[in-house]
Length: 127
Image (cartoon, rainbow, N blue to C red; front, top):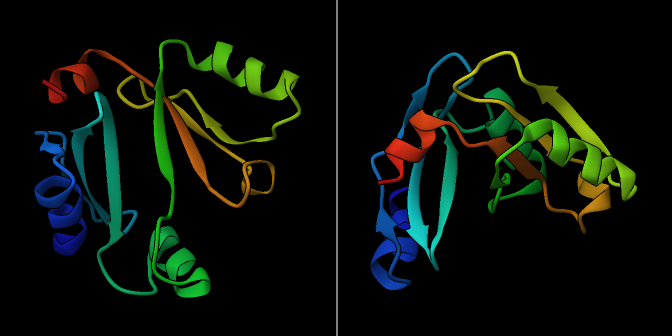
């Protein structure tokens, strides 16, 4: 994570944001930064090969696990993608502080794209 942070912030000019932390239960840590006027999130496994992120990277190799994109309305975004033939995976709107889903990588040229609904908490952390 440190090398990735150095690349995206120090070399590419991203601005590190306060929205960072760890999810021991899911086995990953994350950082966010603003780059090109957009919020970007990097996720890294806490232990190589463990948890969903670690297993994914063990199977597919080092690189991005997923790219996150913020939307104003999660249900509207889901309907938009589905109406355009893009499969939605793991739709979850149970936690008001983090509603999200993923786009199937077979529909997005191999990239796993996370779509999440901005809320006051995520917006505040981006300032």
